[in-house]
Length: 375
Image (cartoon, rainbow, N blue to C red; front, side):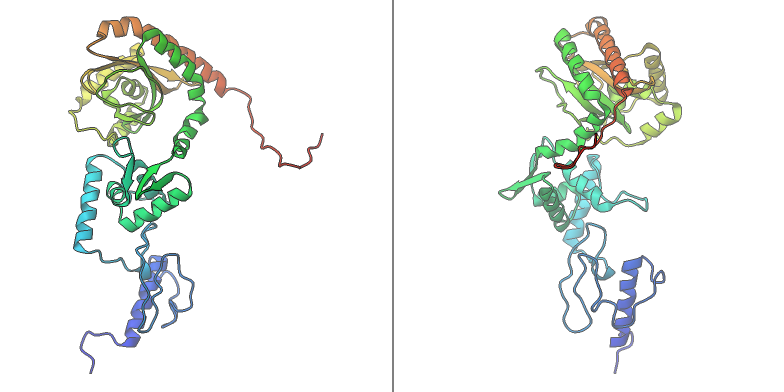
């Protein structure tokens, strides 16, 4: 006698068939259902799916969630410790403003790619090497997922492992420098930045706007003891920097609101935000006079002045600054002595960049070795 509510063998087969169809199509009715008892046996399965078939034997179910899929279409029921640990990792990542997998909403969003980028971004100056467990926690991923992503990145030459720990390779630099190289900005700006640093004896940087943050794309530094480390790719909240104010001042009202609505990903401790009306008034002044000042707004002891860098159309595409230590250089010296040199340097870079952008330049692929070239 069958206990009420218990599925017989045929009913179980029908249920598994429905689950398999749901996993493959996203809806049980969006595709013709396979015949009972033949849904999985002998059929091609997506990578990472279980070898589970009808009968007493069941193969292992892999935790293949890189692409968001699960074996036989059913989410694996994580244990309580797994769920608690993952929730803690997600919370910690959200608190420090880092990237998080699972935030895509578009139909073409590739979660696996986003998670791979999260793994790369998890490394930093404070975490140059990490174990598998540390990478999984920093990226908010399950250990099996983090492991597969790390091994994939290692095959691509972006990650190297030794002694049970992982670290990035110099090849990762190509991901960021490709953007700067495509602009042609660094090759043009470097000699000018070096000349400016030689004149002022102070560090100079160039940054672009990304959401509500600035991102450093070029820098020539001098040895100084400062409270914040600055490298290519470093992010800071735009409203707290001189370069950010210059870039925000160049935006339209709608663009400004959209930029400031995005949360900062700089990872700095929360700080009081300027009043909206006060910020708007300051940006109007910055736009009118053509430069901006940040006096220990980002961190104690850091003072800087910045000006815009424009492309051939006159559009502000970047900002460059001179940064000084507040205890060594007064605001008067920064504005009266360093600012004129900075304005002159930014103008030279803008002119050369406009010429570079207007060059009649086309790259033709090289012919294959041994192929004939017609005259």
